Amino acid sequence: MEPPRRRRRRAAPAPDRLTSLPEHLIEGILSRVGFCDAVRTSALSRAWRRRWESLPTLSLSLLDGRLSTLPTTVDSVLIRYAGSIRDFSIRIDAHSSSSCRIDDWLIALSRRGVRSMDLRLHCGLTINSSIYSFSQLVTLKLHGGYVCPTPVGFAGFPVLQELKLVDVQFSVKEALEAIISRSPLLAVLELCEVCNPSDEPCMIAAPNLRSLTIVLVCDYYAWEFGELPRLDNATIDFDTYVNGDDFGAFVAGVAHARRLTLSTFYQPVLHHVELG
Image (cartoon, rainbow, N blue to C red; front, side, top):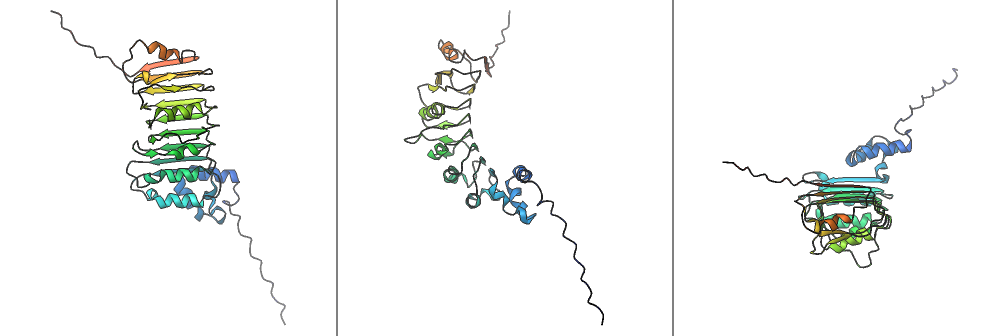
């Protein structure tokens, strides 16, 4: 009787290189490929399944004609996100069907510990009081949109250090004044084509502000400066011809900055005169 044959041991499967990647490297890859591609990486390896749901960065581009414009898509993403969202950015154009849901999403995000937020919206989109509920914001960038007044009891942004506003409309000037004055750590402020809706000048006062940039499309007397004791760099661009007796008082508010830059896009018209 022949002895039983020994079964050959199967060779151990080759190690999954995707699985063996360090955590910080996987996170870096997913953060750089774009949100849609990050979701697709779930098919690469078992270890990568649903990894996108714990990314600290969420960036959405909701443009008309793309699948991601569906509001249900964003709803599903926010529901499935497991952890906090450190950095959030979103882009919505004027024709996107998702524009009416921005406040709902901001309310959901306000409980996720967002520290950096970049909103790029069309000018006609209204942002309600949800924008004021992000108490952990360090950086806020807002491009476009119509901002409503601050809610009752608004305590400010206690850790906000950088505020950049481009082509933003405020319903009342007191809203912008409150954001600036109630952000005690604010160090960088950029206002580009931000319109003051009031006949009274808007006050800019911040005890720790170091860098100030203002691009004016309206008259300079729509703004005035309060206490800016730590101002190092001030840049002010004028879109119109500058004149008036009170211009000196306007500049005096930032004249103590270590570096002061004043510029204008205005080009005077030179008339040709023929001499006989």
